[in-house]
Length: 498
Figure (spheres, one colour):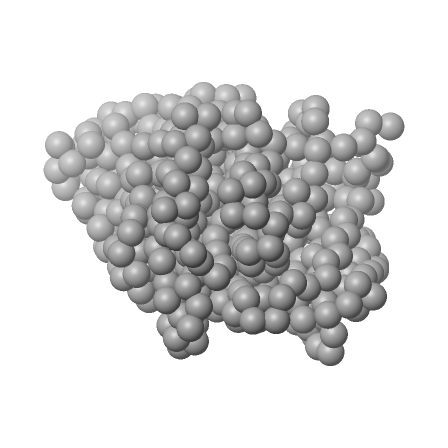
C-alpha cells in the first residue's frame, strides 16, 4: 500500500475576459464544490463527474492510503489574482510538506490557468512542487481537454493525463486513469516522455468530440496506448489565452524514448491532416432566430441556439443580451434564453414575486463592446433558490448552488436568471424554475459545447451563434500580443505575426 497526497486547483483563464478570479471565487461553491480541505475531500466529490472523484474511487480499489490536502476551483474568467494564487499554492505546498514520507502525488488541475504574474499557472505550481519534493517522487496530474500544455508542465510532472471528451463527460474517468498511472510509476519507476505541438489553433466549437474530426482523433489517442506506449494524451488547448504556449499539444509516455516519440509523431500527423475539417458554419443572431422560427413551426423538438461568445465556461460573463434582443425583436414566441447571470435583476424578481410586472435594465453589467443592458418591462413567471441536483452527463451528481434564480417573460420570450454564472449545460437548470426543456420551441443557451451532452439528444437542430461576448468564435478577432509568432489562429489561416 502506497501513501499518496492528493489535491486540486482548477481555473480556465480567458485573458481577454473582463473580470479576474479572486480568492473568494475559489472559496465559493457554484457549479462545482467550493474550497475543500483535509478529510472533507474524501466525501465531498462522491458521485460527481470530476477527476478527483474518479481518482478517489480507483485509488481506494487499489488499497492505497490517501492523504488529502485541498481542492478548489473557480468559474472561468480573466487572470487569477496574485493574492489568490499565492495563497492557494502556498497552502497546498505547505500541506503536502507536512505529510512526511509519501510515495506519490496526484493533482487535479485544469491546464489553462494564467495569473496576473504567470502565463503558466500550472507549470509554476509544478516547478515549485518539484523544488520541494525533489526530482524523483512520482507526480501525476489530470488535465482538462482544453489545457494549454507547456514544456514546464511536461518537465515537472511525471505524467499528464488529459480527459478525452468534449462535452467533458469523462472527467471522473480521467481521474481513474491518473490513479492507474500513479500506481505504475510508484512501483516501476519513471516513463520516457514526448511532447508535440500543432501550428494552428482550433476554435472551441470545432473541438466537440461528439462529431468529426475530433471523435476520430480521440479514438486514435486511445488506440495508441498499446505495447510500449503506456499513456497518450491530446489537449486541444484553450484559444482565448494570450500566452506563448497556447494551442493543441500531444504528450506520450513509453517504456522507451522511441515508443514515446513514435506515438506522439503518429498522433501529430493525424491532427495536422484534419486541419481543414475543423471549420463550421457560424450564424449571426438575427439570421439564427429567423431560421429557428421558421424551422420550429414543423419541428417536433427544440431548435438550440448556442450563445457561444458569452459562454461562461470560456470566461464569458454570462450577462450579454445580444441574442436576447434578437429573440424579442424577431418575435420568437416560445423561446427560452438561459442562463443570464444578473444577481440584481434576480433579487428584484424575488422581491416583486411571481406574477408581478417589473421594469429592468437587464444584463450588460460587465460592459465591453456591444454589451449594454436590455431595457424593458418583464413579467415574473417563476423563482427558485438555485439549489438543485444536476442530472445531465456533464454536471452529473453535482449539487448546484447558483444563487437566487428567476424566470422573466416578455413578448413570449422567457429569460432564465441566475446569480452565479454557470453555463447552461444541464436540463435541471431549467426544470428548477419550472421549464421543461423538451417542450420548448427554441432554447438559446450560453454554452459552446458542454450543453450538447444533455441537450443534443432532445434537439431538432443546433446552431452556433456569434452574438457579442468575450469569447469570439473566430480567434482572429482576439487582440493577441504574447502568443508565439507563426501559429495560425484559425485552421488554414495566415500565420500570426507575418
